[in-house]
Amino acid sequence: MNMMNHKLADLHPYPFAKMATLLANSAPAVDFKEIKLGIGEPKHAPPAFVLDVLTENLDKIAHYPTTNGLFELRQTIAHWLERRFMLHHVNPNSQVLPVMGTREAIFSSVQAIINLPSETTGIKSAAATAKPLIVMPNPFYQIYEGAALLAGAEPYFIACTAENNFKGDYRSVPAQVWEHTQLVFVCSPNNPTGAVMSFEDWEDLIRLSDQYGFVIASDECYSELYFDTPPVGLLQACAMLGRHDFKNCLVFHSLSKRSNLPGLRSGFVAGDAQVLAQYLQYRTYHGCAMPIPHQLASIAAWQDENHVRENRRLYAEKFALWMAELGDTLALTMPDAGFYLWVRVPAAFSNAAGEGDDEAFVRALFEQVNIHALAGRYLSREVDGINPGKGYVRIALVASIEENQEAISRIKSLLAMRATSDTTA
Image 1: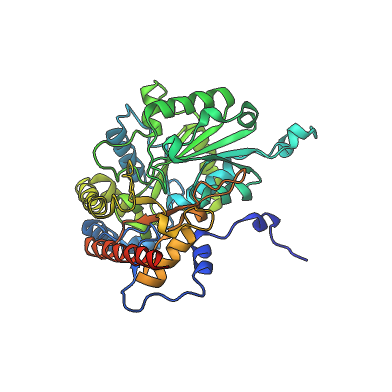
Image 2 (image 1 turned 90 degrees about the horizontal axis):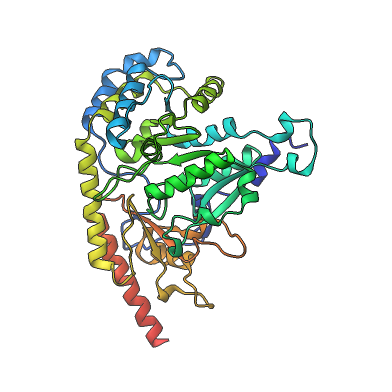
């Protein structure tokens, strides 16, 4: 007898597990040193002053941290939100909650928010017992889907394609879908496409939330990796509409990408105080309080912008390099923000139907020039026979400038070799 949660069987393999399966019988090109552009793990140096604070406070590991964190950390985060998103006042005691990385918080918040109708009503009609819906972009960060499935909800995917500027068309969602929707995930800047929500986009979604009562969860972990104009955040849009209570709105931020501190596991959730109060109660039982040394290091990181500006400069330099060297060859499009290139598979790697084969392209990158990239179809789900990630490859510009230059050189050679072989075939 299987005693495990039956909902676990609904989970898809993680994208990198799928990549491991794809390349299981492949060997990397031995003449080339490995270049990892598949996983979105920042490789820029962490700020030394943050590491100093961490090590200076290791003795505090002997103390239990509280679930809602130090007041000084919540206050620092509140002030950062006010500066960055031009907010009038963020209450550090009720509108901010530190978390052990946003991946954990995105998952656990869904478990706290989703309300299964059969648990709260005695009505057994089909409408009352239907699974609640969680609307999310497609392609997407797979935690959204996994959290939905394990909460007993059903994902509803909105295709994010070149035709809608990779942002999805919320206006096209039928009213009967909204009527069963309890939560909407938005990722802005988006992973993997780099698309950014405008104020008008946020306004439309907020109005829909008012009409149907769902919570908006905005994953803004890439918000500080922009080029010229800082992306508008959900709470900023709320404030512009005079909604300083941030009703039904939550944002998730992290130090992983902003400050090159993925291993610190430090982020926060901010927004609607009523939602956060109930989520805090959930977390008290969930047991994910941030260690005090991590909290103190986080305070230092959120208070400094110089290292963030340098971070943006390095990414901008790498994007400029790719656009100059391969922009025309790969028909590259600059993202609005983030550190990913969402690359349409070149024609040389088309399948029999003439479609770009992302699996074939990433396999060739690995086998022939030892570059790791991620097949776009693994970040998406097929809906009505269409997988919007199919035919794309995600390239994370996380490696050094030198490694990016080398990767560009290798890709040029790979494409040249494929062109030659196609000509002589």
